[in-house]
Length: 249
Image (cartoon, rainbow, N blue to C red; front, side):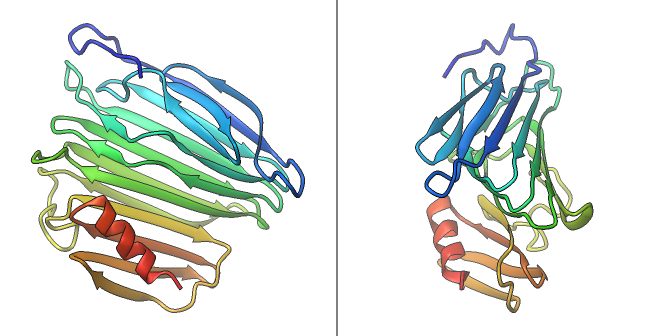
């Protein structure tokens, strides 16, 4: 990973794009084309397409964006190589990351990134939009670690919007941070340090249910007959991932 000096680094306005085409029945995820500016580096690794960091980012003031297009019939399995560390900048300016996904006819997007770590003093917004064709499906997973070990988190806003055929399925907007109203309440995450949200489109939603597992709280929340949102909070990543696994059908 590249390095940036906090005292003199200018804000980064980095952009990347990924186009995934169908590789046929034996290879459902083929990187058709890509474009990347720092801090993005995009590679196909076996069946997955991975986004790696070529510089430390996001830092306060950065404005990053990523466009993903999954073409007709393609099954795209996309993720990140390592956790994203959100750092404060020298001016206190907020940073932002926007991901825009378009999923075509009979296509599927699997977007599973490694956790975003909100560092004390940072102020970051992550916006993810997914535009599905009427016949398309997806699984979108977002993970957040609220602060490093024995530290408070910064301010972090997550906005996830998924539409199908131009109509909204899910719009989830939540802000975390020690100075956010209600942050210590069970209405938000209470004293949890790790948060997972997951949306599945194209599954049997079944009935809503909740579970308490190893100090974690997880909810399986049907949005439509074939659309589910899962929300899980807990003390650390292994515990939350185990709790999420326990509630799956």
